[in-house]
Length: 224
Ligand code: GLN
Image (tube, rainbow, N blue to C red; front, side, top):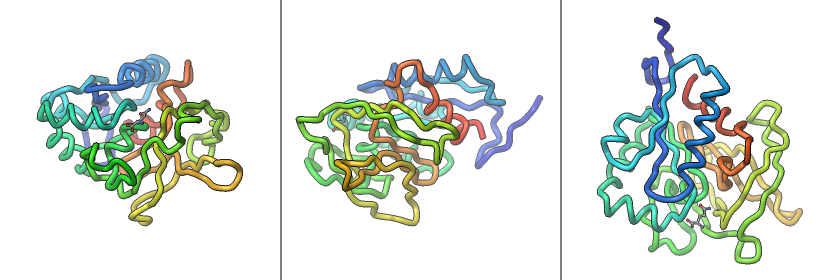
């Protein structure tokens, strides 16, 4: 029996949870399943949906999907999951990936409508919700991620009423992975990493038949 030694954990099996209170959790689950069907990560990986504290305790990693951060936060509080989520995302032995609303939910500070979302406060950034406004609530852009995902220079990134990271509150902890060019003059951070925490303001789980982002996530954060 081969035991994989990795940061903070000696388990030969890893469990990736997908928070399933609200939003695009099924799409994440499907992308992860496809990754596992098509690749050998050298460690047994299990995927489970997370709705209760019991589900969460099984997990080594957690994906917080896109959806509506106000609802997600509210449901988490109403079901009593919130304090367990809080503990999980603040535990440096755990891996967390937030997409879109998940990014908002993880953030330390919200630029607008901050009374509507009780965040988990672990990602040291200031975020503006629905930053692209009504005219451009949703768009897909081909992005070059090859500086962090080998050979991935044409990923179709879908942004849906996406947030924008306005300020990085702790530049030492936070590493920018991708900046989206905006109107040719400014840029918006669309992917970043804060140690064991990954956030994307777009939706890799909506890239049809394209599992490159999820595959990279598993290799980089879960199986290594
Ligand atoms: N606009 C949503 C929010 O504020 C996020 C949208 C999304 O996750 N696609 O939570």
